Every structure is written in structure tokens, then in C-alpha cells.
Length: 184
Image (cartoon, rainbow, N blue to C red; front, side, top):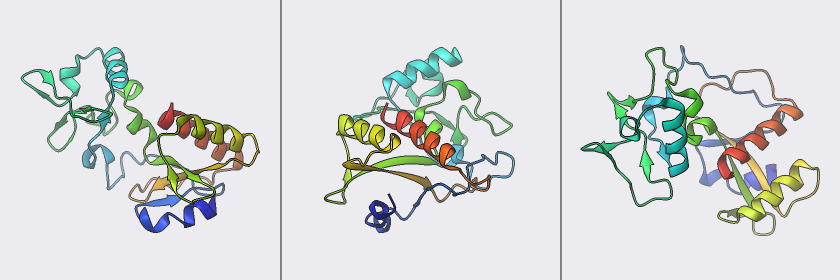
């Protein structure tokens, strides 16, 4: 995993490799100087819009960027964007917590982590080979040598990495959860 990351690190300077022993993530809601809910736009797919509508009881036009009450759909894989008000996510509660935490989009569930899969032969990231990525994650988590190497990363702008060190079991659980959220 370290070798796979070394070949890509220069191209992804906003990220850092996460290995067992790295500090765990703890959201610093009251003390966070970054507030990801203020600085990032969040894309959603159809399924996530449905989940958020079900969990919140809100119509999509209340939480998606909309025009004349109709959600705007962009020509992207995840065509919708969470609505922003006053420079922050419209779902952000006054206490700086997510006002719709249980229905929140996968991007919010993932942040500040994500997983790349790197081809062991070429050293290049792989995208779109979901079956190969799934096989690689299963092989890796099962202790086998995969053809694609999963690389768990964290976003360097997030200041919440001051928790206790990740043990191997906690790290594997984080890798598994991140793969599941990111790739389904």
C-alpha cells in the first residue's frame, strides 16, 4: 500500500496515506477552524436524494439547489447538489452539527477519507472496474495479495485527526466502511 501511494502522492498533495497507527478521526465540531459544511459543495445521486427525503421528511427542493422549486440536475453522474444558504450547507444546524445526520449524503459520510485502487503492474489508479475493485478489497481484507491495491487516504485540510491511534482492526474496519460507502 505504501509503495502504491508513493507513486501517486505527488499528484494528490491534498491527501495523506492512512495506515494502522495513524491518529483516528474525531470531528471537532465546536473547535473546527475549517467546517467542511461551509467550504465544500456536495453532489448527490438519485438514490441519495431519495434517502435524504425519506429520512428528513423534506421535499428535495428544500435541500437541493433548485430553481423555481425544481431541483437543478447537472449533466454529471451525481447530478444534484445540496443547497447552500449564507455560505454553508442548508442542512447545517445552529450547533454546527448536521441537521439531517441519518440521511446525509455519502460524500459527507466519507469525508475526510476515501479509497483509491492502484493497479500493481502499472502503478496507476483504477476507476470504473467495480468488480475488480470489489475483488481486490475482499482479497486484501482476507489477507490475500490482490492485483489492485486499495489505498486509504485522508484529506489534509481536516484538522480532526487527533484521536487515538488506529489499531489494525480499527483500520481494517475503516477501510471496509470507506470502500462500502464509496463504491457500494
